[in-house]
Length: 407
Image (cartoon, rainbow, N blue to C red):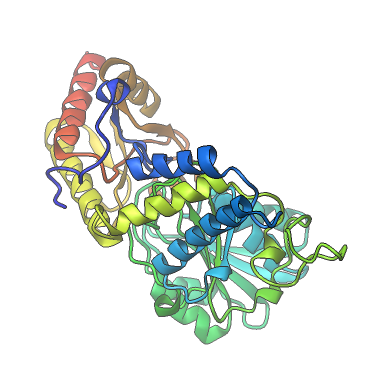
């Protein structure tokens, strides 16, 4: 899969032909046709609740859920698929890890590159006086220094280090394995936010030394919205996590106590079975027509570099947030001198059908680090179905908008 064209994907319908969708960092689109077929199959032909009955349709629903667990486990180097816990999104997974692990008096470490899904749970616990928090400042190019993270750890007090695998603002891929090695030496669990990285970066919990990993099903894994969760390493003590929610699990129904085994202990209520069927199909597509996460990542990075090179040459005052050339996923945030990101984004969408996202992208400290706070940036997120031709059209549209807006 090269940067000149995307892999074989859905035939564009009328709506697709009108837009150049570059908002994959928020939610990937279009989805592979296999995802649509899997969702439809569940809704039309299965429909039952997994684990809540003994009939054959409930059993088939359970099989679909297990297939999704196995797909996520295989993707992330996990031996036991029952340590994949499903929730509505990566935000749920991050909250489950943070609130479930930290106790009163604990100390936690995070960084200025994090999404609010990490920052807000930690800051709330800090404001309530329950924990203390150290926020490690990343460099202005958007990368973390593993030794800075290590120096922030307080031996005997730090109970969690939380870092992103790839910035949702500037796309920079972080040295997760190096950070994990330092955390392991110090005996501190590492939580990784893989919302932007899963599906485009080769992640392996055992190889990389990651203890907990939150993932989004609707971004790089190409599944429907409402899918995601938390993955626990095979050697992580699951008993350390208190469940965010308790309730019906379909197991141990003779007791008013929450089951004490995975995934049930952390997974109460009816799952999004239709979404999980689609998620499994999306991961299958990644390994099949997509060529694997590394191939998808190369394709998206190629589009990112093509856009940066062309926009730098053609758009006066174009400035990339973070490192334009270092290791990254297919996410780029940029500004144009003298023009607001909001005006640029709205103009591109309205006049040319080029869809990105403007603003602070739920990561205010990242923008402070990158020097783009409080105005923010315009962000493009390239996906597996974007093409070099679309990038060229987006650059031409950006150049035209800037020409129109300037005197």
